[in-house]
Length: 377
Image (tube, rainbow, N blue to C red):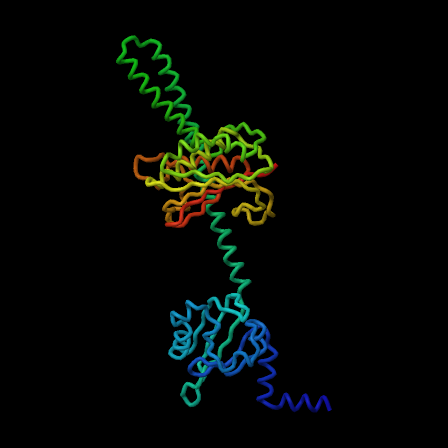
């Protein structure tokens, strides 16, 4: 009897079609009329979108679209494309019954009888996992490319800074000797001016060496919150009267092995950058916290504990097209003559040389946040 019933079912074309559709659970397959009203619903639709047939049949398929897409007329445009071009194929975000969103791969085919359009066949597949994986891969590739670019710039900078530093050492030594032999006051002033300029050049080479990770560090066990508290006076004077400086420093942080002078210089550089971005005044916040995370350039490494120091301002932000270059030596968003372009380079190089990494988060009109991550001991 069971065999006969099975044969009857398989020999009935309508039942075959119904069995086929309701056996497919990886795809939502359903029919629409010419206005986009749902006329059929399969088990795949229920699994992917969460609706039982009685909940959706008779309603418009636009209910699955994001509100902004509905407002823009996207559902109607997709049907029109299918009718005019013979098929619509696309991807986009859709909404489940529970309100969650998923990435949908969609195919809409027109159904015609004797040349007359009577409806549409719609097939939807959930490709959220694939979409997220592709995005992560693209982000990892972009981060790797940026890291390789900065590494190449660093190698070039290291050699240039060493050679320039050797030349400056000779110049400074000769000026020191010359200063002891000059008798008249006017000549002494000229030598002194030249000496100060050479010393300024030596400072620039030290900043370049900091970016290139070629500067000798003297790491010691430090409580980052305590170090920043001790620098409070210097930081507030550097921020200026028009800027409000706030400290949100966590207690009981793990210690980090860092060069104290370079750490203080890095935080001071960030505060000065934020101050310069807000000539009419604003707010700067310095935060410290413990965070388990990983360097975005090394996605295969598991999250580990880092102490995070972040400097956040409410200034104009940095344009998206400039953000990838802010850590490069001599690149600056400031007007000509207002900065050397080496402040963020020093921050980047010191953090990397200390075993950490740097993140920049900025949106035009919503301020800038620079985060420094140092390995916790």
